[in-house]
Length: 461
Image 1 (cartoon, rainbow, N blue to C red):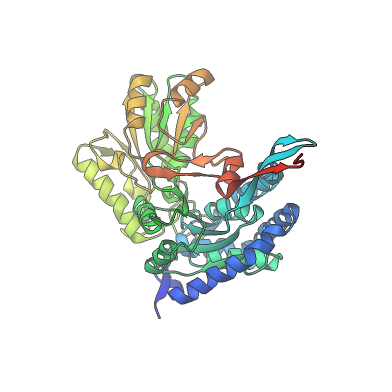
Image 2: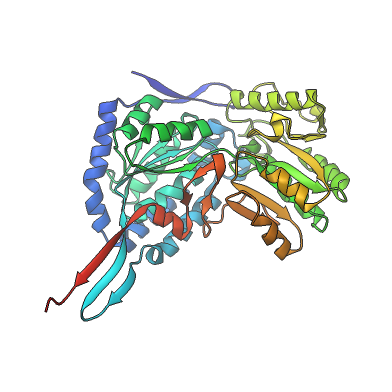
């Protein structure tokens, strides 16, 4: 029997392992989900909403287990307390809008006709969740999917093997029927076979661009709906009128928090020439204050990357950039814990340009490049010179300027004076190779349901 393993970045040990389901066993899971879906959808909406909220509350009660498990599985320091703030914010917000988001659109209600468009659950939703924010990214789809009347099958990345078990445990203990929300351990081949067989009515995948392509290939010809959030290379642009200290604080945090392993993390920053020197100096000082070390130590502020192979990619990109003329400004002597493996010191690079993979390919690590620019036009061209498009962060006191520039940036979200944040009231979406579809907000509910039109004629005479 094939085993799926989580290799802990803390010490390289096998932290957890589970047997992968056979294709037949996986089909049985889907069959149970499909059988349970109609009854679940017939429950009153408010009842479904409250059960989801109770599931989220139960997970909060498990923090003493969940937080250290996250540290062991993917390296985030226990200092930060897990993902509860964002997890709760998203759960509570979608609960607050569920009734309005799923309400029928009434065209006519007269003595002769009822004409309306209702939102109907797709059926069985398959959530393939990533390891970098395993609870928050999963709840983006799980909560609204269940509230809308879908049943959910969840598959997590091997790096966060235990997260799916914890989520299902919390929700089932809170009263969600166990056929309505199920966790599975699958290898890639079985996952693709299930999708290719049309087992699911909707698939939401968060992960790499290549992973997204695999999902599209598997779903080809099945007409299965897909939501894909893939890679990113998110830019920041600091204009001449920016609040310098606020920009440094937010952009450097956005570049390095969670060891830089964030879909919407800041990976490249363009700074107006008038602020460039000061911005670079303050950024290097900011990043140099991290304490790299064991994530189970409450004093650690920067843990290991989730896997040593991820850290290897970052080191290779940095080395390539330096070989082409870039300068690495953070003193490695400040981080003796950098072991050449999963523990990786943060870094700030200057004298970079777009001929370097470091400024074009997703880095997904605690390293950022900073370039000097002279104008909005130059910054815009550089921000758009990317195959990705998830968020862009603009720093200025001029709202109209930010909005005007934002309309020309090829991105899913435009931030002004903030970064690296997912607002559950807004649609989380991307363009180009970052993917397609959208989660959260009213639009997220629309993507997890389908419209059904009712044209009811009351009289025939």
